[in-house]
Image (tube, rainbow, N blue to C red; front, side, top):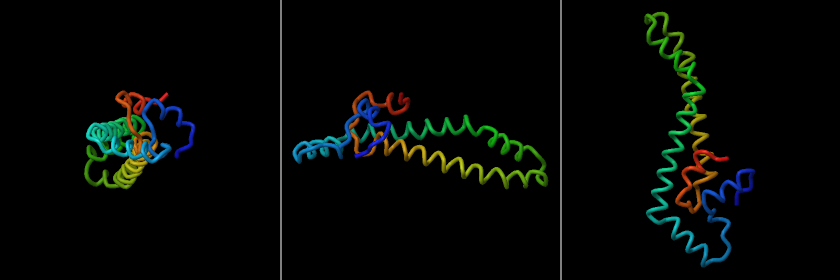
Length: 126
């Protein structure tokens, strides 16, 4: 059971299966969790979380990408040193992106029966 400041937000998204009491209710929730509509919702939300974090990363790290454009536009002998800064920056940006998507996935999607309008609350939590 997750306990955090975001737990009230989870009520708008759906119901965590791990918090269900009773064997019959848990079995019903497990069956619903494996259903086609729930799998499609999880897949769609995961893709949208990836898109959300990618756009957010581009907005926050645009100087890094300008550095890459500068490296491409400079003559070859002057551009090599920019790659020393550009490639590790891209790797760090991808690690931060992955961490954000995984964190939000665990927070809102993993082991949660999603409500039909959950997309808005997952992408823009209050």
